[in-house]
Length: 336
Ligand SMILES: Nc1nc2c(ncn2[C@@H]2O[C@H](COP(=O)(O)OP(=O)(O)OP(=O)(O)O)[C@@H](O)[C@H]2O)c(=O)[nH]1
Ligand SMILES: [Mg+2]
Image 1 (cartoon, rainbow, N blue to C red):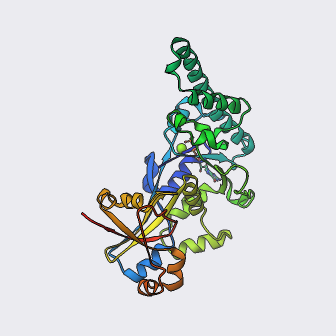
Image 2: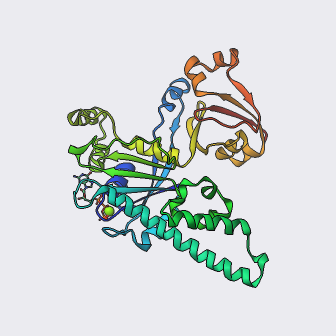
Image 3: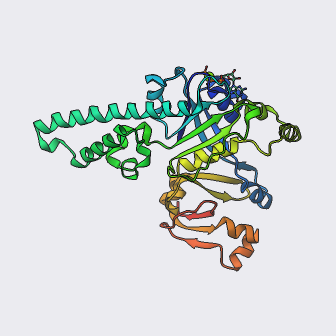
């Protein structure tokens, strides 16, 4: 699951990437970033494990855009990403933020339209040769995609197109989930308040001061960090929000495993079965799956005691078809 940070020249991509990944990443273009999960700590207090392991998301910094256009290199590079994270310069005053967002949407749409038209031309040629060369479903979907793109509607807004297996291979840019990061001056923090429950569930916006987040990230001492935040009159870092929004856009959830060796968060796609979730840990556990012992996070919070949870019957046995929920604490029983 890859997330690509991009945006016009000087918009703050590097600042944001380093804020997310840490100073060591300054000269890298790819980094794994921990997903902070407050559910691990209470489990660790009970099990006192040797280690606590967080989930991670892969972030890429994609460079090479111009001042007003992304250009082919960037458009190519973001094609293999699962989630897009454009950074919008709201601090320099050089470039209207709304305009930047429109330009990015426009670049994604034009790029997709070129792909659609090229493919439709190819299909037309094939059809003249032999009707059987053409998948009518693919053609129908491409015609619909073309109509939308010509009206400047991004493909992510259309479920049928977004989820069509026939179109997966095209990796349409405007069909990818997208998180706009409005990068503001320290003194402008709070200027943008975005409602993220709007009509486009695949698109979110978030305000951040990348420069400040980077400085904040470099303060290791917890007390000092808090003081820095207090001085600025801010409650919390925005990085968690970015990471969680990315997670949500990617359609991911977390399940947990807990024992004396390790307490750990595991990332799976929403809708995974217990058997598939077992496969996230090890293919042998998936193959030899017998059952899953599941305690939901809410029930854990209620009892904070696995024995007690078992007695009252909330520690459940589930079969391989069970759909795993976010926060489930699972022990897998399996044959090897
Ligand atoms: N005041 C302020 N300056 C910022 C902020 N974010 C970035 N800058 C400054 O803007 C400049 C560009 O930031 P970068 O992170 O290097 O931007 P970039 O998108 O990586 O730039 P290129 O790689 O050159 O395209 C740097 O001098 C930053 O210090 C911010 O939130 N506030
Ligand atoms: Mg840079």
